[in-house]
Length: 268
Image 1 (spheres, one colour):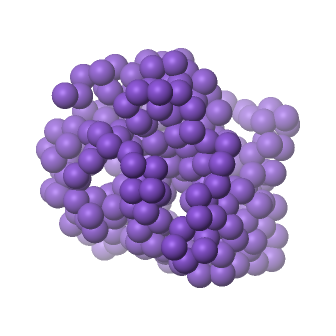
Image 2 (cartoon, rainbow, N blue to C red; image 1 turned 135 degrees about the horizontal axis):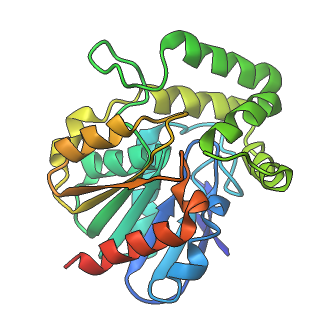
């Protein structure tokens, strides 16, 4: 457990365990590295397993500015450079996928061995030509308003939607603890930006092998999102998790870890 200070003074919290080829886990909007608690103990046995709290999230600095996917990608670039990570496999869950795609768009694929995308669309927004998007403007504005008036209440309703099965009170409580670390100002700022990011033009820039992990339960993200990515990303493979919704790494951790491990071992 450590902190890395960026050039602008922001401190990023991260966990760095094990030895070998690096695998870096990047969480979703409002979430944190703690959501990968079932991955680091497994992957540290074979790899250098790293999880990070993005700017404003988890235990990282609650900076007043920079809460855009583009800035998070720049933070990731600086993080990778300062830790001297080479041949890294990037695992992006939800918004973490946008951060990976924006990273590749800005900086290319040098130093990246492969990517793992977990349950995300090419864009969360329902554009006129992208009907499978998660949010339209009324839904997005409604969520932003509720963040400002009842952030905890919003999360109590949202977090259970990430899972196929009912979440225990104990599990829900630690997730609420993590996601309420963000001030409402940061939570609403990054929600807006990540929800209107459109990565569709970036997908043809991806040439490294990509594993797409999607939950079959469609409370948040449709399987069609994974099928779309599989079609658009050249070297991609789609893996469906039958007993999962938005969090296969928590819902089916043993299978998720094995599938990702197999994928990494297949990379040259």
